[in-house]
Image (cartoon, rainbow, N blue to C red; front, side):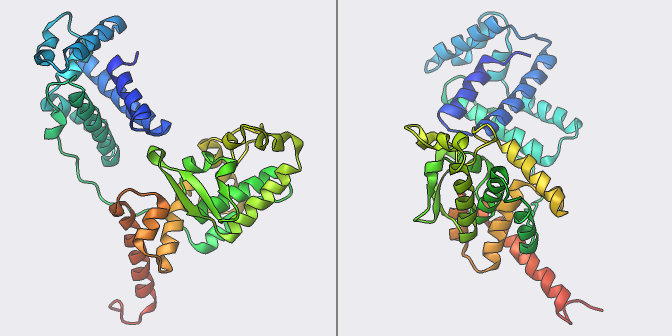
Length: 343
């Protein structure tokens, strides 16, 4: 199915103005395509690219004038007009359809968030007369505590990569960096060689919304990165990427072709070392981020500092880790205290 021009315009807004990551923008786009497909089936209409472009142009021409509400009566019926004229009842029909397909509460919440963002944008642009999402409530979700692994498991994982070749040293440096800083895997692969501040023992990280933050690097991560860089510099093929006038755009962690690694490649490498270390295969790069935060709080770090290190906008996002630390304390208490539970 073709992509609706109005949803293409929204996708451009997400990436160009809101600076969403490509992954998040793709998720929003997939949610909207599903919504459009539902509307096409319900209305018995097939997308006509030219008709939809014309419909969007009429909407844009009418925005800012009194004509936005009556544009739908001009020309043939289009999905663009149905989308822009949708009311809360139509949205609820779509959500009921998703419920019948047995989507999880978390997935439903994300799709509602997509529509909420889309219609808020449409109303602000004057493409819709009203925002139907103001009448839609997001279903309550049970809070899932993030998964964390023990320090011993982390150490077992970090010692898995071989130090005999440049790719093994790179992998060790990557895993050490993920655990030492708590950065997201997308932030890891986005690092450039000039983002490394060895004297300051820190990394410059570009997070969500292209916001930059400085995160400290532990001595183990610094040593692993130094070992990796030493071997890269000894290899003429790889080292030339870090030289010359484009050095500031050169990735810190190189793939075997001296290009930038993808998030998927990091996940594949992690899976390999989990197998070698005999650890739970469901551990993900994000698990190292969770473990970083949990271990800091377990050892007395304050919540505000952890929030800044993780790059969270809201303190409430970080607070979930305090629940995890509290749960671990409770478990330890019940296991160890002789009068914690009735016999």
